[in-house]
Image (cartoon, rainbow, N blue to C red):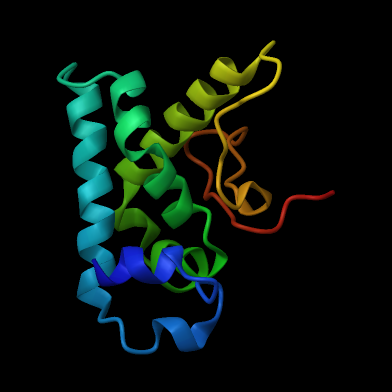
Length: 131
């Protein structure tokens, strides 16, 4: 819960907010989302269902620049399923929002989202998306 509490705070992009969070707590959060990918891959849960329940929390975590820089990127080879799930989830949200007028599914901190157009073998870099 400590990770989620920080993500929900207005300080979630600041290093000071993460100072007392043990790395294992962030690793557990990553592992949770990796398990969601396995549920999807084995047709136990649809992306629609996962999105309804966990979409907000997932994007809040993966699109956080501090989390990206200090936790996910340095150990990116350990969290391959997070990247796979993220790619599927972004495509799902984009498809869901196409042609919709009015309310659309929000992607928290979308300005920091992963670039999903890279070949699967290329290292994904995190940076602020242009304009």
